[in-house]
Image (cartoon, rainbow, N blue to C red):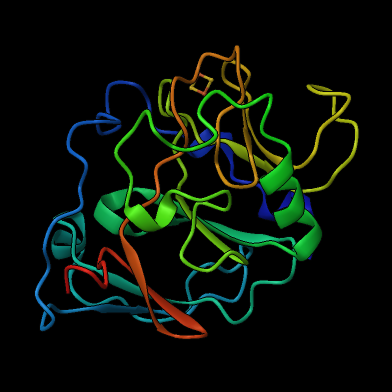
Length: 215
Ligand code: FES
């Protein structure tokens, strides 16, 4: 799967006036176990939606949880942005052992490697910032002014960083995030990418908007 095809389109970036405030609330609300759940089949960024949506768009905008099939995400690739939870785009990526080792060891250039600046789910306070290290789930909005960062997953020199180790780059003002959505030092973005509440229905399906702890 071509990485460029997976890269979020900055043209879809919400404007400063329309995007929700980054820290408007920490959005980890209690949702009952009987809450309606939308079903979404995802096979790749090129065709992000194959399933039917339920509940309604209005309910989704209000924060209804949504199921997402993650079985087709290839190693070291991502799907998204998926406009799911509360209308926010969501990035879901799969990382191999080498990437996870980099996340654990390469922290000196990070502004908040332990996710202490922002309230995050407890399961996001680890080097992979995820429930399962291989899978990362992040809100695809730059914490500066809400542009959609682009996925650059490979370890290679990039025009914006000659020593790039993989992650996300926001072209709006140059913010950089690693593969766990952690912001690097000395960029405009003040915080790591947000981790939405999510839980696993099975090894191949997650629900955005529901914490196991709160279901
Ligand atoms: S909105 Fe991303 S760097 Fe400004």
